[in-house]
Image (cartoon, rainbow, N blue to C red; front, side, top):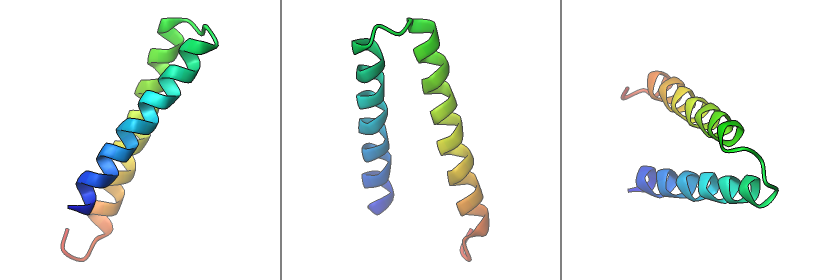
Length: 56
């Protein structure tokens, strides 16, 4: 259950960041690069913690 809460919270933060970039009129392509970068960091972190967990 806590994993879903974390995923939902991260998604909300990504939407907030996307909104901030759009408010400052950053190009859509630049915003997409930032979003893909953050998603990559998130999945890399999840993979590392999954591999490090005793039940992993």
